Image (cartoon, rainbow, N blue to C red):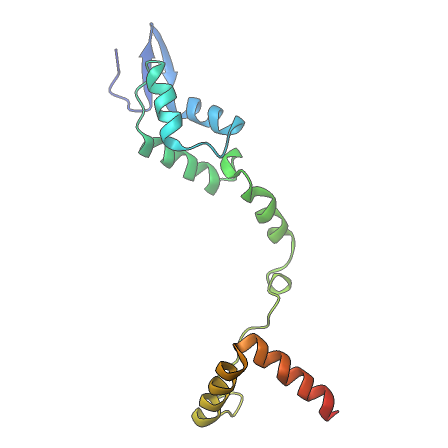
Length: 133
């Protein structure tokens, strides 16, 4: 018989902590879908909705729990490096601080479009700078 506490349910006379069961499953299989976990627990007589499993999974991620799956290594690596070192590109400067006019921006946009994109335009301008030196 279920108790009023939504987190616990009595199964065959013993009290079971639903959130702990979800955490245990996520610790073993962090990439598993909330619906699959909810279906498994419901089949065992422990009624759980997928939204509740999702909430537990999200909370585990926020607290650094095992539900991170593949993202854990990526986040750990980015935490190790200082924020400034993580960014490959420097923070963009405003056109005003670079003394660029609107007409110059429009011309640069047209040039980038003609060359096939901003990245190609950057390559061309880099080559131009090397020739100018």
